[in-house]
Length: 113
Length: 109
Image (tube, rainbow over all chains, first blue to last red; front, side):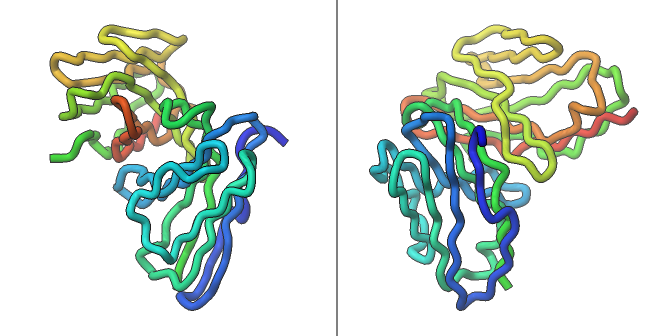
């Protein structure tokens, strides 16, 4: 596998469910990111990890919980979400923190009922 | 005022036309400027990266930066149906990357 891989591609969950999004990068990068993409809005940075350490949490509600066990894997744990959390969640990686040269996965389309 | 303004479109042009996509920004600390292309049901991919005023050309694509006017553009020459996508501008200073909302472009055969 090459690039950045995200699973699942689509997820439907109720507000009381717990689910997780997974991201894996095969590029040897040391920084990984979660972004939220909603219609007609700019990409919203959620979390940044650099060498497995969280370096940025952009005031994200606690119902989103990231986990980065190593430089190649990133998870986003979801719990008691709201319908307004429905969006495309994009994982990205880069060589260093915030160079601008991000490599994105195809995203996980989340629908919260 | 938003830090980065981008017309969301949609923009439809006939095949072969020259396309001009634009963003304006308010933060004079921005030094690095990017254009990402996002096809439907895909993640964004980096298309162009510039860090100075002026033009940068790559095949049919030209990125233009005017720091004095806080204005960046992406030109696509001889547009093809395969160029149909959403184009996002992005820029950064010393810290975080800021994206525009994206412009949805359709090239009509």
